[in-house]
Image 1 (spheres, rainbow, N blue to C red):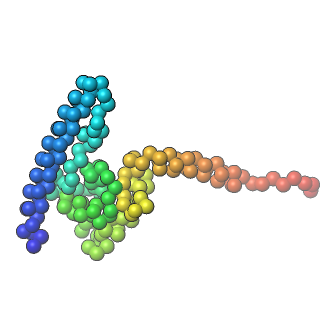
Image 2 (image 1 turned 135 degrees about the vertical axis):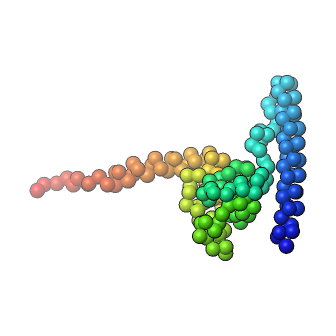
Image 3 (image 1 turned 90 degrees about the vertical axis):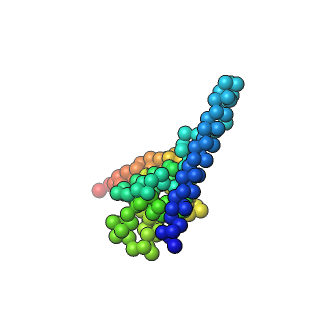
Length: 166
């Protein structure tokens, strides 16, 4: 069944990407008109390339899971559940067999991999993953916490000098 439906999915993805390209062109035109009127652009997402799904069947082949997931999230430009990221990577040719992840464990292993990379990914309270760069307030809080930790840790490591006689 999957073999018969895959070409239809691929054709629909191609059609969707064409529609998104046309919408992006319309947004660019509107932004240009706004600029000519002296107004701010209405659409800030025009250059983000909000196309869904891989452009090629080998989009993620040979890449690490973190690089592939980062590329997928950049394409979607929104937080996604681990199941959705897994589906996108699979459609883009990511080789889960090379990772030695059993099929029933792949979503869980992917979620663990993303969660263990907080320098790049951020797990939201609704159990979706986004790129940390999208959440500057989280980055600021994290940086503030990291700056506070070394000072308090070094103060705690200092030996306490007791006052008093011999």
